[in-house]
Image 1 (spheres, rainbow over the protein chains, first blue to last red):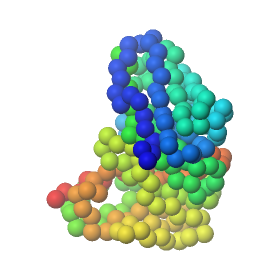
Image 2 (cartoon, chains in turn green, yellow; image 1 turned 60 degrees about the vertical axis):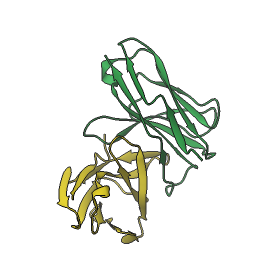
Image 3 (cartoon, chains in turn blue, purple; image 1 turned 180 degrees about the vertical axis):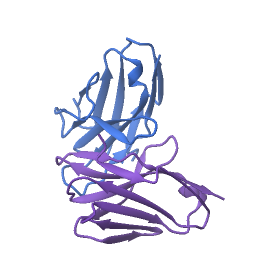
Length: 114
Length: 110
């Protein structure tokens, strides 16, 4: 099993450009999450999904959109990138609800917006 | 905003020494989790301690939880250079959202 994979690993954008980050998991997990990590900070939740066809806002959703058309994939979109969105983005998944669930993380996407 | 805060922010020790990291939180919890992040990599789950547990062990890891003080500690015994990483505590909020602290950067010198 590959676990959680993210595409691409690195990307440089110019202000105003758009892009989509892809997260895929092969563990049949119901829940998927997108986080951003900035220097000296922990992870902050952008959006999450509790199942195919569902999405919900997290702590810092502005400037991002998401879609979960297939259970195994969770896409994060930036419609008009801004320098403030320079960050490392992590995707994670977990089997389902419940306070005892650990999250499984992808390797991250390092995004720079010039 | 972060719901858990780790201290110290950074810790540097010699190989073989023990490393202790602390986590404080503000509201009640069902459980608390600890994760490790090696440089440039994703987070990896280390251990989970439930609110009715006071101590839990996993290999060289020992986690304690004091719900009256709203704090937890992670002890790594006999540290190795490979333990060099950032360590985060995290807890679920609102059922679905895992909230992370800012982390402790541990450096183990060989």
